[in-house]
Amino acid sequence: MSTPSPQPAQAATPAPLARHGQLKAGNPAAGVLKFVAASLAVLLVSTVSIAAIAVHNIASEIKPGVALPGEEDGPKIGAIEGAVNLLLVGSDSGEGNLAYGAREATLNDVTMLLHISEDHKRATVVSFPRDMFVDMPVCPNPDGASYPAVSSQKINQSLSRGGLACPVLTVENLTGLDIPYAAKIEFDGVIEMSNAVGGVEVCVASPIDDRNIPFKLDAGMHTLSGVDALQFLRTRYGVGDGSDLTRISNQQQFLSSLVRTLKSSETLSNPVKLYGIASAASRNLEFSNSLRNVDTMVSIAGALKDIPLDEVVFVRYPIADATIGGQSGVVPIADAAAELFAALEADLPIGLTGGTGGGTVADPNAPEPSPEPSPTATADPVDPTAPVASGSPAPDAPPTRVELPETIQGTTAGDVTCSAGQTAGHPGG
Image (cartoon, rainbow, N blue to C red; front, top):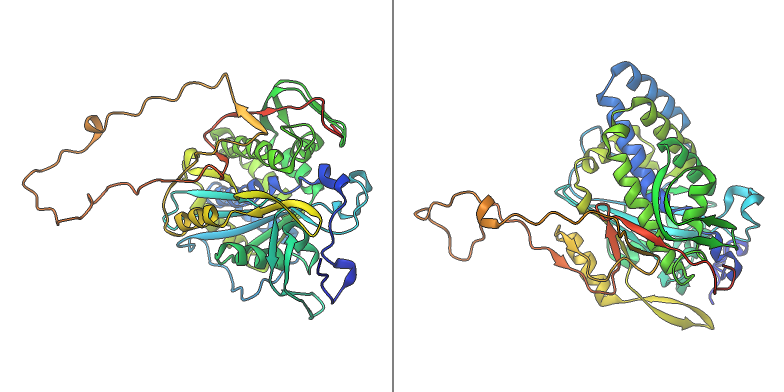
């Protein structure tokens, strides 16, 4: 495997297999940025006195930013227009906290892209499997040098090549999208964020027993916060087939419930809780310079706050098993990925056909969805004498939903799923 030359200690070397059970800091990161944005937006438009204090304190808590190549200053309040692409990275370093185990390198074991459609009617979060082999472009080193381009490296090694800018450049190279915003979270940040939101309710269909972390959870409904929330997101050998791929679907259950919690009236109408969420995020996330501006966070919140739950979609990047250079992993399925990103760039709604993934199952107690109303019963009257241009669609016709290939698995924030626990029969679990 190729090794970047400027700093050998940060070279993109394979992570030991034993570390796979300790890698789930970043899933909350997808929800975390929504916390920050939604929290600040509500604070600024609710009580003026609380908002003024909150913005001052939060701005003072935000960590120094990370420069992304070619980034510009963020927009002012209310100025976000068009589509938004934001990369959320979960680092497994633990920032030196040995409670999470020793770390030989800093890896982005969670990499998620948040895409908000140009019309602000849909949001899609794409999870990139940590063991996916990708090509990495030239990445800047903080000391002013550069890491050379390399091929067939696992995507979770990109953070070790100079920091947050390299995962951004790698995902841009993979998807063809421009990504002007990025943030990174560590394990302790996940704990603080889950505490700030008051916990997230999850459903467990069969018991989880991950002896590798360790972590146990009985079947049933649980409201998780603190260390329990972190362990739920980290567990690999306790769900599905014990793979990182089924762990992704388990994390998506958590994120879906998280979005439902944040959009509930109880959360959005509680300034104290919202300030706690925003403050915890500002203390525990590392932002790109483009996101350190409080106004920018509020502007992104304006694009997120009114999106329906069924149009907040979590998907896993399409992959196939592969072995490269003696390492097992996965590789992109290029044609399926092209369909996904073409739909996002065209601002079209997407539909999932590949199921939720092996880490979750449908909630057997979820209410049956209401039947769709008859189009003839709800359609506006049509004037048969009105002229219609040949071949033109109806003025208010909804865009056609793109049904994605079965190799793209995922869920929506409107779906209620349960963890498929694995209590025995897998090494480490």
